[in-house]
Image (cartoon, rainbow, N blue to C red; front, side, top):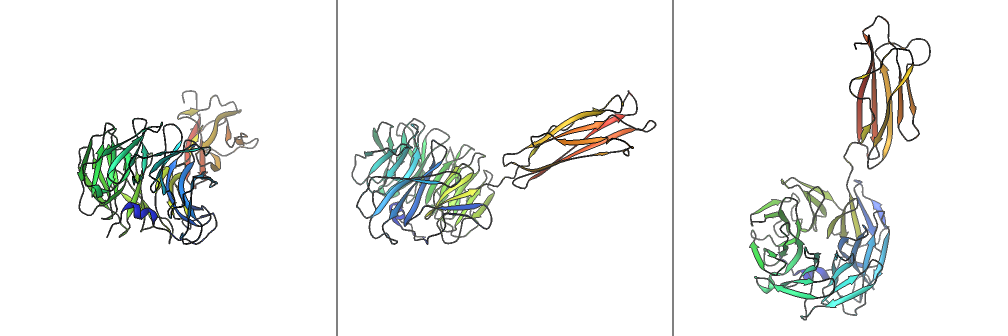
Length: 442
């Protein structure tokens, strides 16, 4: 595979047909939200200080983007409501090249201007300021918060740093000018780790600017990178169709992606420590566990799986002219509470109803249905019922059992069964018993 500079990759235009703003995919996991108008691409995303997803995108004046580009920062809620914030206009053929975005330690959105050679800052109310980089043709690409309270970003031949007050410094990397630093993240060791797409290496720079690099297997051509929960960095080998892992001492291992020529590109880490990645050509979102087990989820045919982040409700991605949301299925069974404790005994057998339980259920996705049934080891005698189950007014049930048993039998056993289904279809069951013993010795 022949690799282009990430600068050229940025200006490649994805042409898409218009579509309704949102719909559920046939497999029920992915929703796509159409940004609207002639959109060249939804670029990169971040979880904002308000918990919503914020993203950079450009809208062209015509369907082929042969004229001007208008650039925006967008905001999308978990429900799919999109708000646009226009950025300063540039009449150049590619605008300012607004691309990378992240949330800063000052609760503002920070972004890069590839063509403008600037770092921008926008508040959540849309107030914009920007800072020019000192060197001409700087072309900043991706940006991330550092461990030192500053923002760090990649340049064609260096790593940049900007404080929240706008003070800028740059640190050369020890490899060739054309190595093309691309993605950047804070590692578990408190240093900044970055990929060198054309240099086929990973770089590491401390907050004091001391840089080292690590060679990768042939044709890896790393693009995205993320910090794992296993004291390692994970990266996308866009050239060799693999996901790589590097430990803090530099040991590298790789895992092949099942879909051929999928071109993995961006990475993110979920709270459980799984590593997620986008497949630009495979049109999948993949996930790999720290022990190397990999799964792929299709995005949709004819669109572009691009930048991804973990956010509210699962994975969010730039998907051509759409923001995509891979909603994580709830696979956790609901919890049943309030069942009678082990050794439940009803004494004396004075023929009265006794309350033995108040049963309810809990689940993050909500409860669809809860049922409670009671059976007895002895037949119901003529007269009032021996088992009474009544709603408690809050979705649960109160269970009352009669202190009754046959005078010459072994004792009565009541069996209480609670069954619950949550809104995601997961089912749980709990079983308890209460005994009316033959005598006081139980």
